[in-house]
Length: 390
Image (cartoon, rainbow, N blue to C red):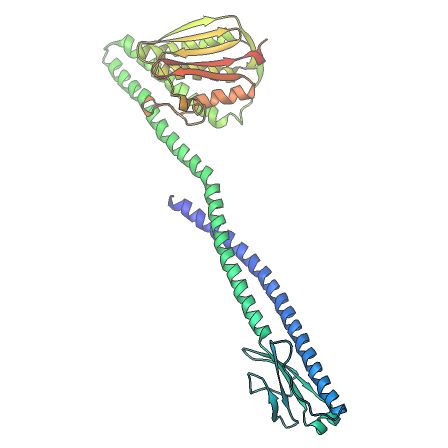
């Protein structure tokens, strides 16, 4: 991963994780506040209920002229204490000794308190004025809730970060592949163009010296046509979506003859002979796209043929085929060969866009495309033009 890709990845993760965690934090904070209010409200109800129960027991004992005997509360989370009007302790199960008796509801770091007072006419007789209810339930549950919220936020951040990383890698993958393909394409184009240009320069220099003029002229023509073919493929691949095309009636054999004549000068430099076996055939297609199909299949055949071999171009019952007797294509590569930038062995050259162009045109016109190939024996590319026959 290069510097720009890392920068893009980190920027995406920062924005994605930051925004998601922020939204999650707001939701969790809202949940925490609602749960805290509910816990405090529940504890308050329980403490008030306990204080009222104790008060009722005290008043009942007074009415029956009995001595009030403090009892344990049923709710084990609640403890209570009794104080006289001067704040002196009468009875206590409280865990805290410092309590503000004049504040009805109070809290410290560990407990919550509820203070209930008896009416004056009662506390003067029984000497009990304050009933203090103590509980640590609310504080304990709120602490647990905090830990729960923090744990959820922590685990969610890790999960979001992991998903964000996978998404970023997934999104960057096609871009990375495109960049790698383009980088490979540029390198291959420089290498592929270097050969005919070098031949041009050498042939021109030799021609100036007056040596082998006919042979050098053939080399110049062949190199110029190779450069032209490479340029045309590059231009079509880059600008075909912007160009305007028109379907017309085409004498397919005449078009093939033109292509074969064009490539004869290239084939002759490898000692390759191109033969034609053509039945009459008229089709209705765009001429430029049709020429692309024929040119690329013939060019491909020349490129991957052995020296001093032959190529057979056929049209039979609407099926166009180009057969070479070259290196062939391994079975595992035959399904991939029509993909852009997919090439044969590295030393054979080519940009890997010619067969991709053929495949795209065939898809556009619903033409059936297939191949037969055997390693070291050669290949035959077939295209059925039945859907565009006139």
